[in-house]
Length: 190
Length: 190
DNA sequence: ACCTGAACACCGTTCAAGT
DNA sequence: ACCTGAACACCGTTCAAGT
Image (tube, rainbow over all chains, first blue to last red; front, top):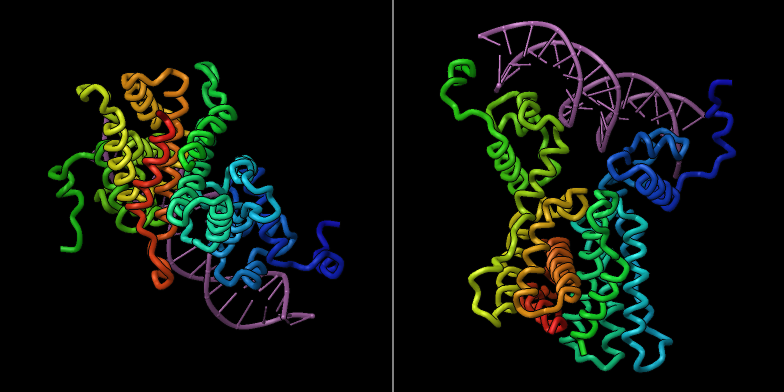
């Protein structure tokens, strides 16, 4: 009546890296990054905390890296776009990427400083590819890709910092501000 | 011979909020954010950890907020600039601000997501003021200020993420890339 | 007013043991 | 192969006590 883990052990879906990461993301989104502990994650997975180490030998470090990869690796679609529409492709990607970051605001500090380059290289490469196909020179494309990604991440960070405070003063229309700044950056490219 | 804290207690400089924050920043810069603990901070200050709570009643939360304010609050100098040189003022501010963030890379994740708007409002306001004095319209100035700050923070984050990895591939010239992206942003303003 | 010391409820992680 | 349970060395913070 109290708890019968050994009986249900056979029936429940087995642990997997993917299920661990997704459950961890749920905890971060719902309760904040500081409440993500191995013990709590174990509880949510209906498993002892130590079982997680069997799938993530590097422990919490690896867990956090997995979270970053899960939310920050979102390349733009370079192929199949109408020629000359590269600005629209970038606009669409930026809106979607910003949405991702805001939806998982708790992992933003990890995205920013986890030494996990692999999580972003695919994204940066895709942006450069879109620009290159749009006829932008190689050097400019490399700069613009980093500028755009830096802007989107930095702006999302500013937004997250501001939300939920003294709305009395005068609320910033972040949607409008993001779009305007985005046009400013894209306009600077060419 | 072992330790005589009670004897030296009178001679050492007394605890102060400023000294606490500065010592904490030294720990973060030297050993990383994860090694900043109240106990270690107490050791560095030659005091029991609990003494810190007397100056920072909100504990570690308040300590981290103090760190953010200490490094991220760095307004641009709006006054005394030659008229028409507002772009140079912004260039100078951006270079300095980036330098600050990179010098204290350990606090960058805190700058990004600590709900501590006060730490950045003075900085944003100063940028808007520089733009307004430069003849930029109010609305554009508000957008450009956030865009610029977002870019600088986001770009610094990308830089920090990348350093110290497989330099084998092909190292990015971050200085050049930052400057190029900055010109792109400033050029977009007007 | 300012600091200490012991205590409490947590952490991440190791390691031997179970199945 | 996969998971458990106890243990270790830490955390942040409270609270009564010292000076």
